[in-house]
Length: 256
Length: 219
Image (cartoon, one colour):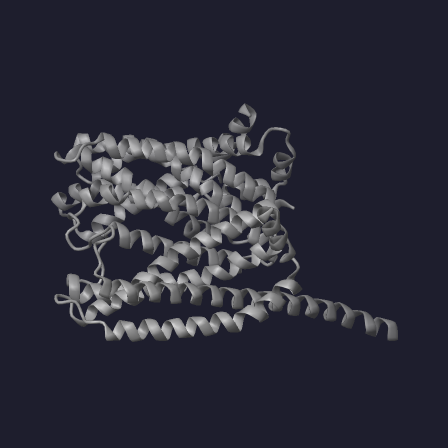
């Protein structure tokens, strides 16, 4: 039964020590592959010819599109972890969606910033209140809100469960934002500056883009696993500090 | 359930409940706009529906953090959690009471503010109608935020930050329906019906999410 095997594998990881062992084993590999993919992707990016209309600025796409894609994927990972938190009370899921939020915020910020830099020469403006831009900006705000919520609560497991509820509610909102595209455009200027949907990309642009997307995805997972490892260590340190403080309170009492 | 509804309503209407403060805040926000953009009546009538909607959104956020906090402070939240009724149903009733106490006054006050903004009768009617349909959605979304932040000592600002991004679709369709009623080419019904759909959607999702969050913060 491959399914039950997968489930036992995942529940095995509930033991933080096992996860730390796994992380220590695969992290160097993932980091290495990420670096190689980035090297290939960046080489292809700069080796490929510029667009005949956009010139050099088309190279922004190779950073912008993967970052935008990852900002969505990161939220999906968080939503899956949130389900893991609420349904199975998986301790690793708590750590997972807590540490994914800053990463998601960072990728969303990269997507927004590069998109803005790209928009300046292409559209003649830094920012348009277009449905796509606005919905990504809302996503950024949701990430920041989740980070703020996690910081506001002392008890990590309670913070995890509560923010998991919020993550799931926020995930429900994403399709609504996406469907609002048409309505938003009828209200404001017609969609002349931004073109949505996959335009037919030439192979010359497609290959670097795909490799960069893969590199970004691996970068995310590398950073995510590293951040989860750090979070587990941080919790251990704080638990040991609490224990030490308790012990320190006890020993002078004995002596006296 | 009826007793809970009446109790919450009484609490919100009587002094200290904050229902009237919400309306006052609403009127103040809208009254501040002409000072900011200038008293140009044509401009005001054009941006009027949007301003009224934004004012309503902000003042709907204002009272949210008190939704479960007062119950937590006097201990009745624990009694509510121990009830045999499904918690989501109780939360739904609390949402309704909160809306009747805080949302409905905003809807009633909106025509007056529409007059201030030099809006036409059709625009005032449309704005009032969209507010009537849209503000419950704000309450239902806000219930989740309020439940999430109930255990925090100063959760008020955090509730607003968490709820505002989720409330954006409501704002989009509320404003676009209000404009569609005035401007000819755009039809009124599609955005209005989507607004209704959003409200009904959050009427289901909101209480369930809030109940889940309350159960998780309580222990």
